[in-house]
Length: 168
Image (cartoon, rainbow, N blue to C red; front, top):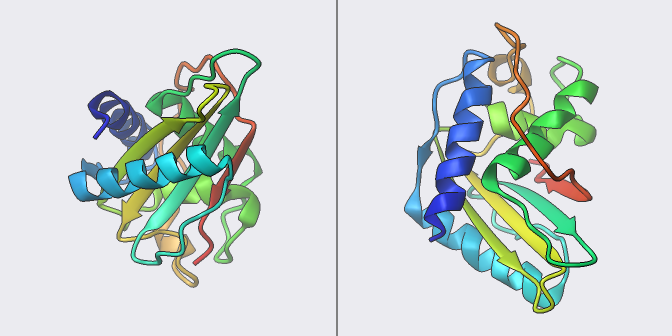
């Protein structure tokens, strides 16, 4: 388990969740181990696709560079959260903001993260896994609250290339 990645991602999630009045997440080592294995599979195959396991929510982040790619837990979290700018607070799932809604999903209690680089080091993949999963049909209004205070942007050096969110 990548402790630094998990500590960064959990801290970033909790800072952003607090701005929405959502409870803190705790680290689940089992989710982190599974996320790490999936990140390694993505890096090995150079694909960005979700696992088929519906027991957890899943966010994916991907960064590519002409030299060595890097993506911290804080940066991946900010990439996902930045979808707040296109989110509309309605009951329906919105694919363009599914990462954001999973990050702040009020009913989610635990998370774990994994990160792996491609063999040439030019691509990096971050996987976030969450339980109970977010993005559940018919549950958006009660689990995706508007910010209750201004949200300060997390410091991030890199911006996303592509990201995905599980549609439940």
